[in-house]
Image 1 (cartoon, rainbow, N blue to C red):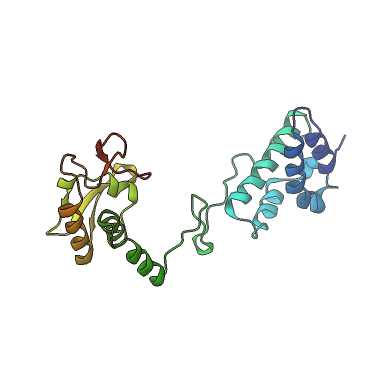
Image 2 (cartoon, rainbow, N blue to C red):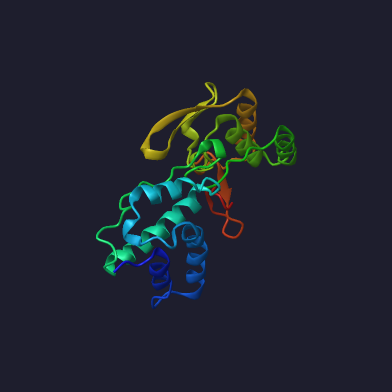
Length: 219
């Protein structure tokens, strides 16, 4: 006996163990699909139908799009287990990738850049803090990640050639080069502030114990 997509969805949402908040979230996600295909017998809905529907959701971010696909996948798995389908029509369907033209990235965070005015202000407020000033210059001028810069030892930095080598993602080594003004800020910091008792380029002193350690993101 045929059963509609709407009827299967009702069973899917009313199953035991589903939290009210999750149920409501699933309802809102599946409502647009049901508006289009709710009266269709679920057994006639093929992979192309679901692909066309998912491809039409161009207004969604890629993470929200993936969530919609995952919920539909769960609904169809439920239908399969209940005997309404012989197979899941969207099994192993690839998820949408981030679209860089929309500022989408794998972390789902929009990359933002400081304006020239903001950079100028940042340099101005750190000018009296030699360590922070050197760190800001090095990050800005070299393009290295903060974790990479804070992992540097003093011996790893060539002030004359204005370069250093880091180990980035995938355990790959790469050279980073920095500008003369960054080299000057770094030299001033090394000469006046850096603690020579530690091998780290950027050092920090514990305010309670006086112990000298490598600077970390929370220092």
